[in-house]
Image (cartoon, rainbow, N blue to C red):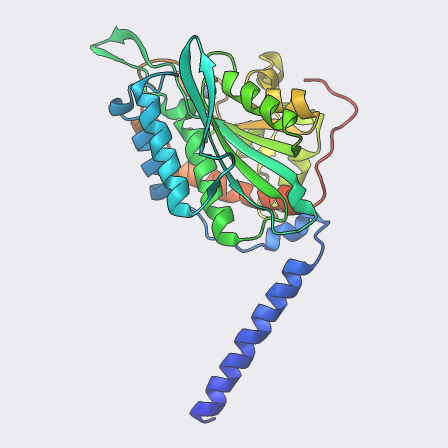
Length: 332
Ligand SMILES: [Zn+2]
């Protein structure tokens, strides 16, 4: 075969595969299993680590709402969105509200849906980025760094934003929301959920991430889902990933009513749609909850990257496939 034939054969192959890709994109995806086929650039541990390390550094002094440290965190997140070319959801990235007379702000960005009809439907992917700031000193350390709680959830949202932007395959609009004042009583998520409701936005699902920095031991799944039986979210994530069980039910989540204790809950209240939290903190695998010892060194970023990559087929299913549904019987 001569050079010209080789080149034209190559061009033929390339155009064939991109044509196929286009057809696949245009196809209506109703079966979540099909989303397992979506190709995406996997996130690596180093990229996740960079976010967790900065957000939990002493320079940010525990990211208390209204502090200088959380302002630095917000600048960092805005800059990341800008670099990724992901636009603000409102006029600016900051969604302002007041807490005890101080300015507080969620950081909110958006990836417009690629389907003209489905883009009206919004999937919110969120995590709180605030923490509790300075606490009583232990051995000279008074900074509650909040690495696991919740620099990890924040880094998870940023990684998913990066993957979704690169994949360029989200038929629904995706809103990335980093909440402030979660530690003061879910104030940031309450504010944003109510604002989106008032503005008439059609939120169809909310995926929230809390404390995903340490792996669970001896469980068949990677992360548990709060409000596990409230919707078909767990099934969709598990059927979308053909390689392994991604999520499951943790009994303590119901005992401690975790469904109502994180930023998913205000979205459930406002929109009555599946709005749930993924976490890997199971009360046995982390001893530094709200303590000065919650530091970057204890976060397992390989586990985080593994979890994010395993969750992505489910994320593509939620963003492109059938709408998630609530179940009639609820025990959480
Ligand atoms: Zn938290």
